[in-house]
Image 1 (cartoon, rainbow, N blue to C red):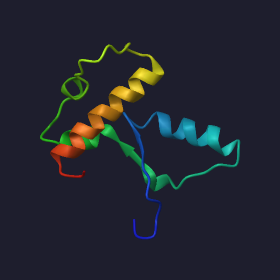
Image 2 (cartoon, helix red, strand yellow):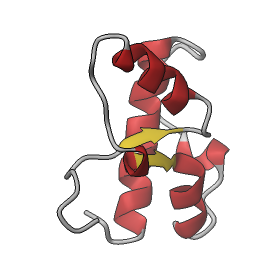
Image 3 (cartoon, rainbow, N blue to C red):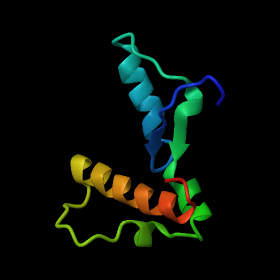
Image 4 (cartoon, rainbow, N blue to C red):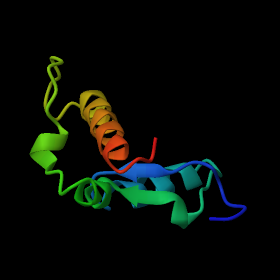
Length: 87
């Protein structure tokens, strides 16, 4: 977006951004709705990268642990962005 924020809020699916936006709003913090992005879209653009393939890592991470899930998603996003030359 021309003149818009230089950041994006990435999530796997569209479930989390509205919850986060509500929590942030309680503290008078807001972001434009257009900054939200879905990881599934970039995975599809990255040569049909599957969710399973996206999350392969040799690091010992615990499944369904919020911090580990966020880290795993960040790693997958980096791989997908490299595949579509968005680095």
